[in-house]
Image (cartoon, rainbow, N blue to C red):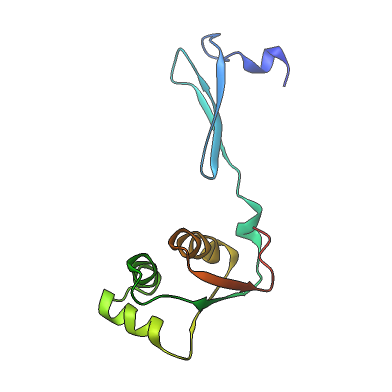
Length: 120
């Protein structure tokens, strides 16, 4: 970017770059002029179907139970029973769906794996 690109075309004020989520733009610091665009993260274009498997969870650990309840939409007693089930707990989804699952499971301290390997 050169110096002339950081000057507002309307009032001559300085422009600043702001990013939030998938939106980014240049905003004048003096007037209401702005130029906005979208910058989608690469994982939104990932069409791979990922399988998330909870390897082990403790039914007496409230964080584990709450994470399962959050991901499944079940009430705590049902989430606890699901964690207890011998079949295990499995989720599938695209990268943009799996990323928050990964965050929730890791944040609760649950042991899990994602297949194929999750690059995000």
